[in-house]
Length: 453
Image (cartoon, helix red, strand yellow):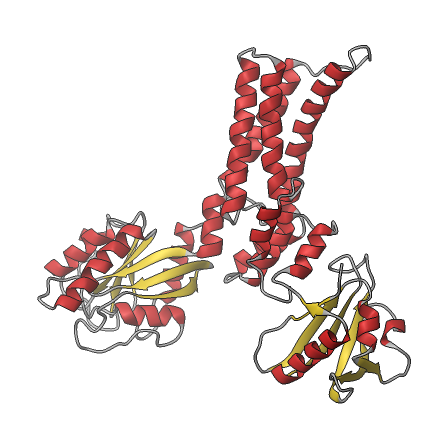
């Protein structure tokens, strides 16, 4: 493969910026743009040891004093010769370094090409490759923990025994058919049923994690509901940690839905601050109210905000009815720093009722605990949680095929019917790990990556 190069850090001022190079012959290219201060060529430096030196531009002029390290293949990230330049984090320096590498014979790396080469060179399977981008995009500690365990091969190790067991069934069938004169022991019906039952349980357990995986990756759609001026925007600002929404004493300030992400109780929330729900003659505000109701219908969690310093109003009851559209509700008696006038008893059927002051930051810890209780981690160990639709769809196909093979065996159908379903399950599992290589599939996966990873 040709030599590729890319900037692997963000295009912004920073303390350190990294330029990465990979491919056969990359060390000779690096010799043209980097001069170690200790003398001698960079290509002769000790592997995996940082070397101080001068980074040169296309004209041979020094543009930085930086550290460089080389990783000879196959013991590198990509499985081929690699090098990195750890520069001062000026975007100008990084661009000049990259242009110098291009002039010396490297080319621009494509999206995810370093990780794709690691996959093609057998250094990781597809579940590990996808875990790389999941780790980069993690927005909670739980998501990062799951991704790093998958990067270590946790999901592959869960799937491989199922694949190998199905392969054993298929190979025994073929061996008996192809070599009838050999003394090959056939699997008994009970042994095959046991194997298929274990495979079914494993795949069912994996598939059951998909809901948790969606929460880890995309977050929980959360509608903040209530009548105007009860503190919905103040709550949004308190959860995200800055003034995302305009807060005034004027009712109806929020006329459209405002969306933002925030982590609460270890759960990523996709917060939607909605327009206050009330009857209004204002056409613009009325559209906002309709969007509020639709947000409630699509939410997995509704935060019903009420003014705890005032008795329950008809508009509060209307907002509560909208909140019922969500499968989970937390009722928040806001403004608890003021004298309380709202009776919580009629609201208890909706969900937990908490006292908070969004403006003063009171009660937010209790809110986070309530959210965590509604979305528990579950029993699946980190790394064994399905986090994307591709994995989930393939595991679903594998489970359907395993159930088909099991039913065929129980119904006494001919061995070829069992074999056909077993092979369908193997193909689906092979798509998850990359044993079955499809160019369109791998191209779509690595398109998600940033350049330089």
